[in-house]
Each structure stands twice: as structure tokens, then as C-alpha cells.
Image 1 (cartoon, rainbow, N blue to C red):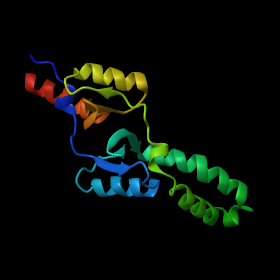
Image 2 (image 1 turned 180 degrees about the horizontal axis):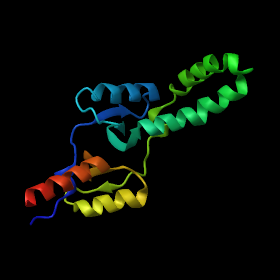
Image 3 (image 1 turned 90 degrees about the vertical axis):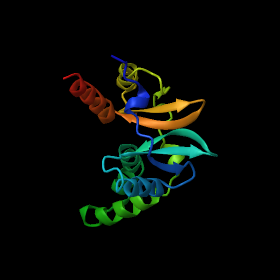
Length: 159
């Protein structure tokens, strides 16, 4: 039985953003891409055409928490104006560059990497995805869900 690889499990279509794009632009790119791929939760970030990292909804939420939530609590005079202050601070935070929040430490694997090693890299890194890279070029992404589905499909084929 052939060994499943990163290439077998990867998705080769994904949302993208430039490092200089705003977090809002990146979030909108993910939302737009979800029309094609409903489980999409991340976009690849490029700088000068080179892949630099991944940016997911949780990273954007973390930026909002880091930037907007604390500022809103500090700037509001109480519960009456917190919501309005928070919305304004979120709008400011969403203008920050996507490249700043992109996760640059996502595991990078080759297309021929055995799937069990891809999953091990994700687990060791604490990240739910890996970037499939060949000669510095991003070919695709493997998410935890993709890896599990590939294993399930492989198990089904064995029946």
C-alpha cells in the first residue's frame, strides 16, 4: 500500500493576501474564498511574490483582542459607551498590515512528505495546518481536517 503524502491531502486553492494588505482585506479574502471552499479559515500571505506565512481567523481575532479590546476598556467611560468604543478600536486594528499578524512559523513540508510526518509537524508546532512548499514556492496547504479526511478515505479504500 503506498504511503499517503502531503500532496495527497493538500488543497491547492486557497485565499491569498499581500503582506501590506490590511487585516480587514485579508479577512474579506477568506470570507470571499469561503464561497468556493466553505471550510476555508486561512489565507496565505505573500510579500513581493514570496510566501511568508499564513493568516487565519483566530490570528485576526488575536490581533483584535491584543489591540482593540484593551484599548476599548481603557478608553470607554463605562458600559454605556464600550460597544461604540470597541467598534471604533476594532476598525483601527483591522487596518494593521496582514504581514504583521501572519504566522511565519507554520510547518513547511515537501509534497512528498509522508502524511504521518505532516501530522506530527502540525502537532509539534501546535498549528492546525502545514504549508506544502517546493523550491520555496507555496504549492498548497494541509489542514488538520484535510489530514483526517485523507486518512479516513484511505481507510475506506482498504475495506
